[in-house]
Amino acid sequence: MASTVHVQVTLADDLDIERTTYAPPEILAVVAAAGQPTDHGFTKHADRPWRATFQIRGEDRIEVARAIEGRFRELGYEADAVFSP
Image (cartoon, rainbow, N blue to C red; front, side):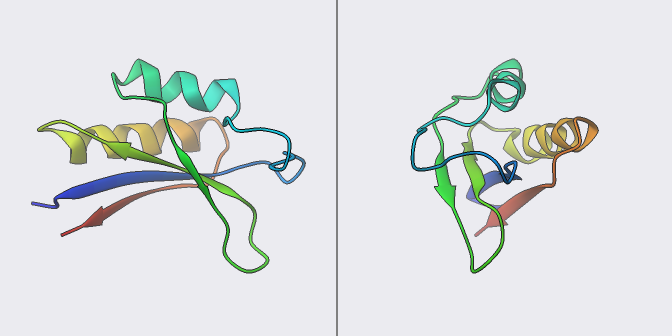
């Protein structure tokens, strides 16, 4: 079983990361609805858009991460569940 589970979601290109410290409300709502903390970080690789990264906690964190990933995709976001040993 993975010991660390994150969900990453690509943010809209027009999000001004210099002026905000929060992901958009609809993203935070998905995470909160899954019973997960909404604290997150931001990452950016090369010319790709900014991504918000949420650490998923709990015994069923893999299933929860997959559900959150799916919900983000239903909302039109690019999202990935990431598992690390």
